[in-house]
Image (cartoon, rainbow, N blue to C red; front, side, top):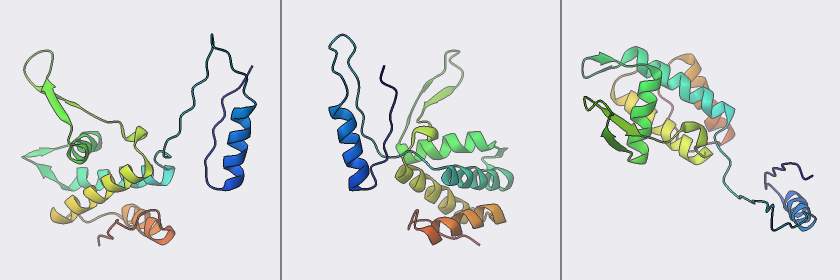
Length: 152
């Protein structure tokens, strides 16, 4: 029985290990294996930064006369970033956004989302919390994203 293996291809040695593992995997046409190569999804630090900035937006911005939850703001920003589609809901009295989950976003996609949220917050005069500012400073210091803007 072959167990699931995941490799983060950061250097030649890890790449070599992954290739060797593939070469030693038994082939069985009745039970084929699937190999997927993809960019790493969001980091825990990015996730924390996302929710800190969404919380600041949620607490400080009225959107067309309404206060929205962090989850609702997340839907608005992901829809704006990915040009998502909307369809009528089942009752016919509203709409549903056909969205993308942030948990499946790559590091680069989530960096772009956080950049969009920060730009919107700056336009709306949001004063970002220490948690949000520290998360942005951390990203800038460690080079996770050179696009994020520090908002005072």
